[in-house]
Image 1 (cartoon, rainbow, N blue to C red):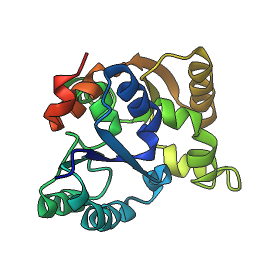
Image 2: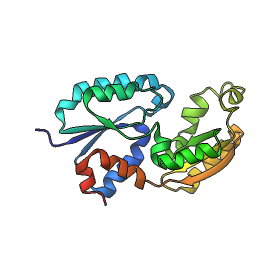
Image 3: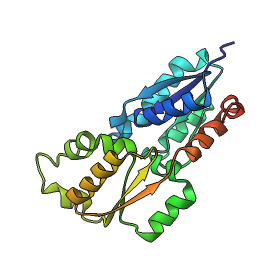
Image 4: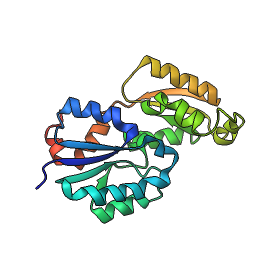
Length: 203
């Protein structure tokens, strides 16, 4: 029987997962990342995870998925139910980084909140500016972001340069700026809860 656990993960989580594997000694995990730009194409997520689980699942002792629903409208959960595989709790990475209670509070404070994570700050130009066509058609900014009031940067691993870039992003989008430190403890706990072998070596 295969001893390794497969973690299928969004590429947007690669830096954080690698940090946690190193910190916690999760050497039993084999991580396979899916393209991070599927943030802009959620229709690809469920069928591609279905295909990969069909091809790979029998080679591993256990499998789990580091995704939220991520805009699939329940289709990802249907795929995972078919394969008997679990995913991270919550609708998206903003929720499982911040924690559900904190995320709900943020949305109650201001429903018009646009969120960034460390990854999205690092790749703001590719995924937001170019991905949404704002570099070619700046007038689209108000169409995409006209109903937003603030930008909240959910920080996993503090970095003054990323904070500066996030503030610049808020200015470019015409939004007020806030930073909230989430850290990675909650994310680590959610990952370990899906896999008892990880929980047994969680520091």
